[in-house]
Image (spheres, rainbow, N blue to C red):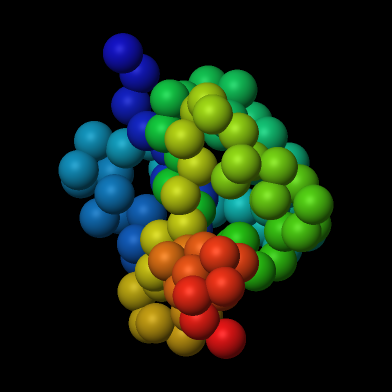
Length: 98
């Protein structure tokens, strides 16, 4: 099995590398291309919230919705970009919350 891929900032990438992930630090404007490449080579892709915020929305949504590989948005080291609250969004869509 291949290792997961992390797309994010250099500092967080160092930690993920120590945990065994392959890491990519995409340049501004190359985020969507980096996501496509990571999806082609890994069973799990972890995307920092800041990188996800700079991606083409339709491409990111398609990656998050796909069954494989699993794509997850993870918090940034500084917490500057919030991670989407999926549970709240689902409750809203189901009419349990406004």
